[in-house]
Amino acid sequence: MGNIELGERPVFLAPMEDVTDIGFRLLCKRFGASMVYTEFVSAEALVRDIKSTVQKLTIADEERPVGIQIYGRDIDAMVDAAKIVEQAGPDLIDLNFGCPVKKVAGKGAGAGML
Image (cartoon, rainbow, N blue to C red; front, side, top):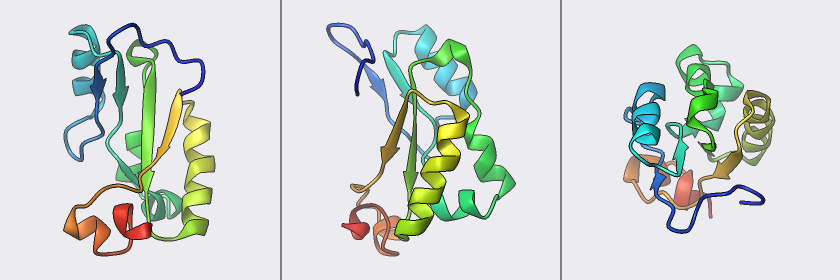
């Protein structure tokens, strides 16, 4: 987490599909979240430049510090996606290797990639 200052007892908003959009993240920051995450982002969809996926990279200064989490099953796509995410300017890029959800891990992403 490097030099990100989170306070003595930080509260994190986890990345949740169809939940942690920019409005929700800003609301959570206003009510005390120390750090928020965008929805988790498919590396393959990001590399393919899928509009709905690229929109998930939109962040506002008011929500900082903010992290963007990517997941995927192809190493090259994960590398390329991380480079794309870096251009969005998050405070943290998180690689998801722990998601056990069947539709994610069952396709070789998240925990399935390990």
